[in-house]
Image 1: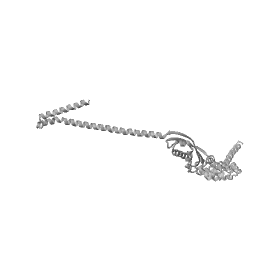
Image 2: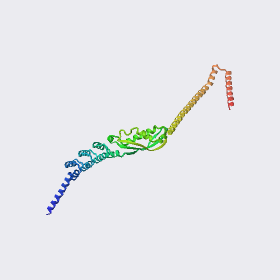
Image 3: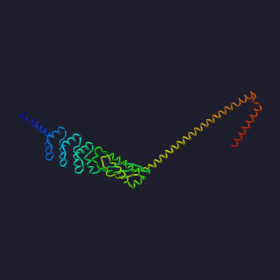
Image 4: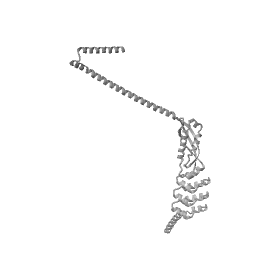
Length: 323
């Protein structure tokens, strides 16, 4: 008796497992939901999705949502997009939003945008509700040398056709910053920019900065302009300091050359004095030689001594008068 009960329990357990297995691979409830929603999909397709590791609920639920919204979607297309790594619910949501907003967007384009790494649903929403991007502070210098620091708000709308391969927000911000610098730099005075900040917006918009990007620039509004440093005065001071340093260097060079020349002249004078001293040291020997050879007499020697004495006396008188 107990053996029969045990056998029944085992059979019931096996039956439950088989029943779970059947309902897992053959999602009858999901198939019935699709049927009553007007989606034509066979049980075989759902079973094959299981084998291909595609969640049938994802595909069927999106088919139901698309069908109710009036879209004509194919299960094979959704399944292929899922296997390619795409976000099927995001793509279907974007298609529904685009249809409601009268935006031309088909499944291939939406799938391509999604596989390119962009949020296609957010892009469609941005096409309906433009997005405002705040630029970081942009510093530029007018022609009068005054620095201006401007902040802008850029209103953009997603360009669906340029989402694949188009540049992103960073490129738009960089181009707007470049346009602000260019427009301020071309102004004759910073006062002109402060009086007419919309001048910057007009100049920047005329440049067509949204070319090749995934956005369409609707407007550029200057939110704030602050006056920065007097760059012109700073540059003039730096130039004056540089000129002063150059002049000091040249003066120091001339002074060093003058000192070197003076030292050279002193050296030459000392050399000349040394030669004179050497020459004077040879005079007594020359006189002695003249006495021995008979070319100089005693009277001639006395006359020479008198002349030297007169010379020394005159030099002494001149030095006394100078004092």
